[in-house]
Length: 207
Image (cartoon, rainbow, N blue to C red; front, side, top):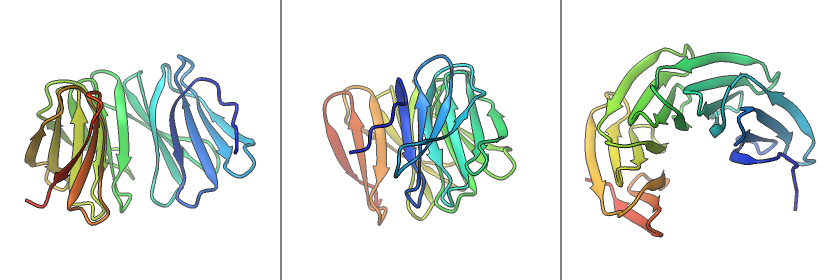
């Protein structure tokens, strides 16, 4: 077992080749730490956020790390150098979740402002804002083919979106409390959701 002394941690992710582990601080220092996944040795401490880090996600090629924060921003970092690349601003409140599309061209973010935002991962430009949730958006996930996006929220629903056009496709209802996480099956026919109602639900999303 590898133990990394990362303090109070609110987010964690491993890069695609399994060599780097990223952790986000739940403290107001807003730091993101990069670790050697084999030895547990610190590689870099990334500073710039001014509040807790709620989520971290590596790009599919592992060269960029995205971090979401209570300061209302998403920050992109060069994983080789630890240097900041850009800051994505637009959410009206804390950013809770981030996820890359499988091809790495789009970054999705979900926030306490009840919106999902899709960003151009290369330029940082906002492509579109998806509205429909009536509470905080706590989870975002792309299907393996990148065609669909799922979001889960404090309004007890999961929403499916066309990831290219942003058009809403479906609203999945059944949880009786906050939806904390969502994930597609590899073939894209099923969606799993985890809720604060102590259930995991499996949905048929072929329709």
